[in-house]
Length: 75
Image (cartoon, rainbow, N blue to C red; front, side, top):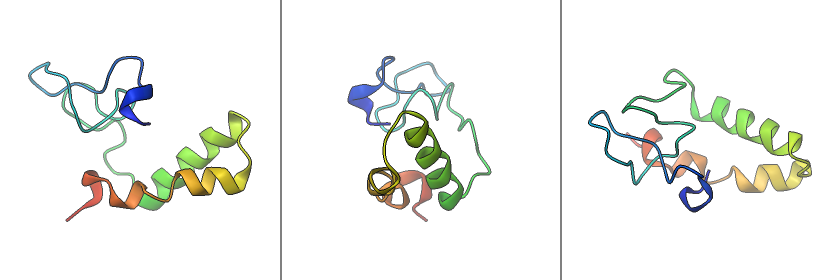
């Protein structure tokens, strides 16, 4: 989720400060909500959510193309 669309302004770090990198759905209290998810699993999850919201499949795929570039999956 783009942070500018996050109603909570982003997730929270372990110390309670606002995370400027991760959204509130993915990163509350300094931990990932789905820590064992692979990038592919996350893309499929997000595509499914977007389809539930009425986005066509090709747009859901387009919107998830940047997920592998997020800091979470850099190593």
